[in-house]
Image (cartoon, rainbow, N blue to C red; front, top):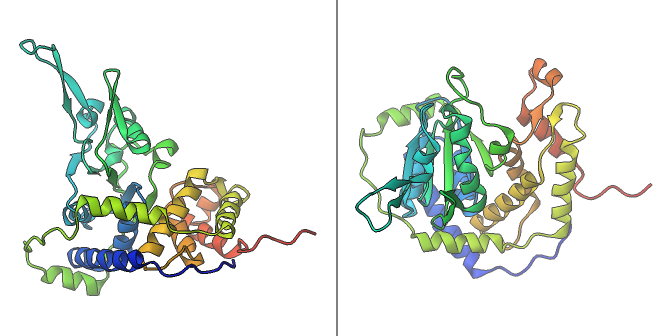
Length: 324
């Protein structure tokens, strides 16, 4: 993948310093999860949404709320339960007989810069679908009227992969709206010792940047140059998922878009003037692991989605094959 490197852009170096400071601050709050922090920060820069999956007590919700606080975003949180209704998410028209207009719209918690959707898979499919329009279009429709959401807008949802009783697994259409799926592992014994030494309540650190800084950084990430050869590589990789016998469902075009957007964010955070091949390869697992499904034989063999995708990355040629 050959391309002529453009000259360094000063704004890239400034962005690198600002976002490195943010990542360092988050890493002090969530010890031993630097890779998770990087993926979540890149998702914010890419203008996407994140699904965090892991057992309870690993700091998923804390990480999301700290990200919002340190970037001065308006954060709201919803604890999803089976009895939650769509109006509890989007808001609803409330009857007020003494008002000039009999009904007044009361916004729901979705009207925020950062919505933390705790245990999203505990809500019924009807309530889960209330987020589809918000995540894809950036607005919600209630009572026949469409209302825009604040800008920027990001959903960070969590779910527990172990407890299945009383849950409603997210359908493929809902999963596809998430830019990334981030697996949150248990901390190592060394990191666990550091966590146990932390004080019960740490002093709140002031915000490191403002909402306008996030908006500006998103624009800069979207402007990161990416070569046509890199785009062609991503297209070959997405196509390869549809011809892999170990996969019953291949990745969608939205998955390819997620790879590109994440790679642009990582290249900006690294201070590079353009998207490089390692940026693209790094984005494959978080961008595609929830967009493909294992075939039954692969599941019975104990194969994991990440293992199949890693193998596809290794086998997909960077340069297009020569014609016969």
